[in-house]
Image 1 (cartoon, rainbow, N blue to C red):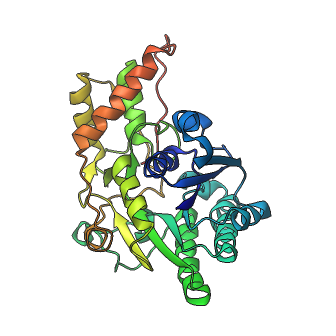
Image 2 (image 1 turned 120 degrees about the vertical axis):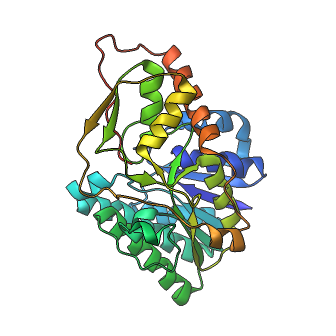
Length: 331
């Protein structure tokens, strides 16, 4: 099958490219390398041969549509976009330009190319900040986005519905929990596991936002990639949660990771941003029914893999001698 992965040099996208190539699919990667890195694709570039083609291109550009028409993928996995909620508050126009206009360029290309399906990476912040009694949240929950980033992602879901109705372009939209795993950067949107791992590996202080009692649904990247691969042929016309169904507090996460690392870290606290969710957990029942998907990686096993990678990086990096801390990452 011919596939395209936008954002394919990023954390999740590159892992998806690995999976697609391993299954024998042809893959076109579209990435402007503003957040992703060709280093994430080094191994598959060496082994992929003609099955892998990389295009350095911003999804906002009209050339993206032309490229999709020319390459004619059967399935487009659309993961490109801005992910930092705080940045969307600071510059909502840029966020909408990338996440909405960029997505429309992709949808127009898929429509004109006669693609079978678009699989879209949505966000748990679509649902807004919910009461504990409403968790784990199901897909029937009304969308209450409370940040420009979530509003933009919600708009793309609505466009997907419209393109399906108007142009018979099938879609699957995956609402992702807090995805973590190897290759994730410790700074910027969503990298709290990576940030903790780097601090624990280098002996730096750990920064916790607020009191650390806010919860997230942490789901391992390999499990998420499995959901994407399945959504390439299943779950048409559906929004599906991809999470574990359980919320883990930041304090619990840090305790788990410190235990795995065998480290007692110095903990510092920083203020919580107004746009941060208080709690989040996604009910994965629909994904189990329609995608045949379930998460299988425990938090302990996933965090162990991230810590091991952070330690490998620390061994080949210069550790700060001034005790400087790793910057806090958004949840």
